[in-house]
Image 1 (cartoon, rainbow, N blue to C red):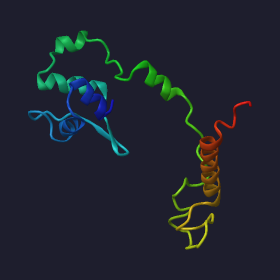
Image 2 (cartoon, rainbow, N blue to C red):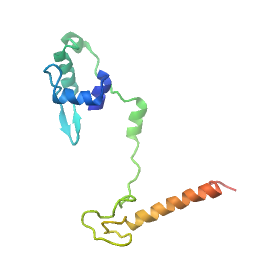
Image 3 (tube, rainbow, N blue to C red):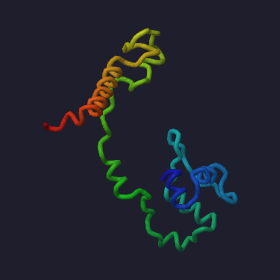
Image 4 (cartoon, rainbow, N blue to C red):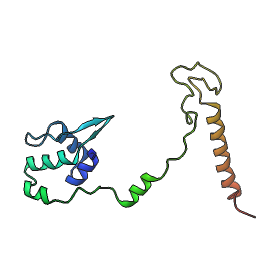
Length: 143
């Protein structure tokens, strides 16, 4: 579970949940592991921490149902959907090669200050499509 999940279950702010992981509550620190930039908390550690803090008793924790995910069914379905395709070039207006690129005065695949030429092309096509829809209506519709 994440900090956001703990905050929703305890009905506190995410910042307060972070404090529980860092400083604790009345001397009881919520055990967590950093995964990248996020903290991960196991269900067992979370239940034990609630018992240690006095918010739950061992008897109620034994008969308690497993923790349900906070996410709704719709959000789980959205997570199962495939991610949209990512362009092989950096998106507009990010430089094509900010670290190793050379300074150029026009879009170039190895530029450190201009976007990739394909990103410029995709941007211009999208802008042209928007203008066409604005002035001519939906171009995909049959006349």
